[in-house]
Amino acid sequence: MSIERKMEYFNEAVNQEVESKKRKLQHEMTTAANDEITTALTTAAAEAQVQTLAQLQAIQKVMNKRISLAQAEARRTLATLRERLTAQLFDSIKEDIVAFTQSSEYESFLIASVKSAQDKSLHPYAILQLTPNDMHLGETMQEATGLTPEPEDENMLGGYKLVTENRSKILEFTLSARLSQARQEFMRTHREAVCEISDISLGGHHGKR
Image (cartoon, rainbow, N blue to C red; front, side):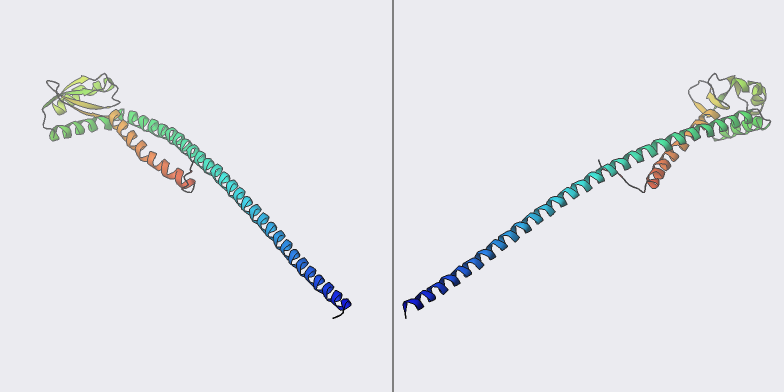
């Protein structure tokens, strides 16, 4: 082989090697660049996801707090309304009771109630305590029941107390006590209803702090 041919062969081989290395280097550079871009995009996406989740959690926390505050406000509003309506209701009932104690039916009611209490009691009651306003019925009540009437200074609103002679036993049937019991039962029942209403009105949500 002549020297010229050998030189041509050598140049071709070198050029092929250069082209091969250049293509390999370009491929490696492209791959590396793509990897860096992918990594950067993945990192950015992950950071964005974390940021989005953090934002969602922050929003959820604010919503839960607002729901809790709304529930508390609803309960306070309903409780205030319940108390106001209860006061109005029982003021009206009290007025009705006072009107009843001034009616013609009140005397017969007292007589029938005292006699029924005497029949059911195991204690020999001797004294019939009435409100000062009812003492004008004392003589009639004594004739009908055989009990000695005496005024009771406590505000009984109406009704009576039966007392044994030695005053060791007292049976109370005052209208004020009955009214108080009815009010307590009403408040207990409607306190539970208020909690149920407040939950229903807010969809049953319970906020987490």
